[in-house]
Image 1 (spheres, rainbow, N blue to C red):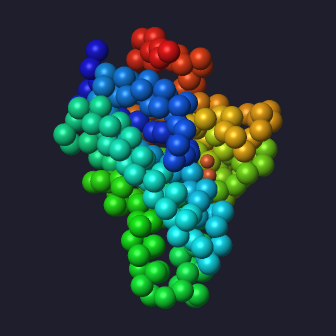
Image 2 (tube, protein in one colour):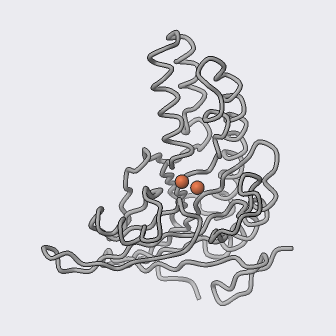
Image 3 (cartoon, rainbow, N blue to C red):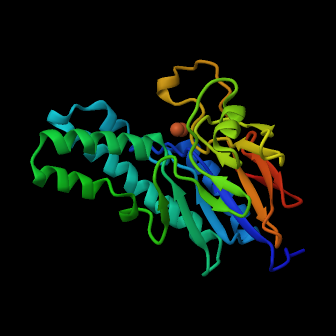
Length: 261
Ligand SMILES: [Fe+2]
Ligand SMILES: [Fe+2]
């Protein structure tokens, strides 16, 4: 059954962590999410940041930053192509595209550009600033700076800021509103209330779409999981959020089993 026209749907993914050379897990997960997008035809595609890994620009010093920028640009080009494919799979010409920058693709670039502004020529600064501009790669997409919150009814989307075992509570306490974020690559939520505003609000973190065991994790155990979220906006501007885990390439969603080998 189709959803009523007055109910808007956002398909939300986070933390792709695209590498320049190996994105096997991500590509599988994107295939699965694209199948769901094709069936559900969301009104909004929302990315919650850390899409390119940006390892390059954090690894090289400003003296030889061009090597790092080269790697990061390769990642951004892959991200742009995959984002375009995912958005096109919705088959919705009115699709809104929104992207909240994370610490990898937002903060890391900001830090490099800050250092370059102080120490390099205007020519080099302008060239690297241009190369690291997200809107060059994510076409027709509204981009939000790292930690800026994009509101969808009564819910705020952003990348996420805190780590630690009580991060959902900390986010809910500090931001004082309903939130959905990525950053931790896992699933968790916390509902709190303040003494001034007596309406409870909930912070929800959603799983990542990229590899849960990248090379730098060195097979350490972690709570990282794969998944995505669907958020429905009702005519009264209240949202209903559903977080899905992808397990062994399978998810049950929309009354259907979606499976990818
Ligand atoms: Fe991340
Ligand atoms: Fe992050």
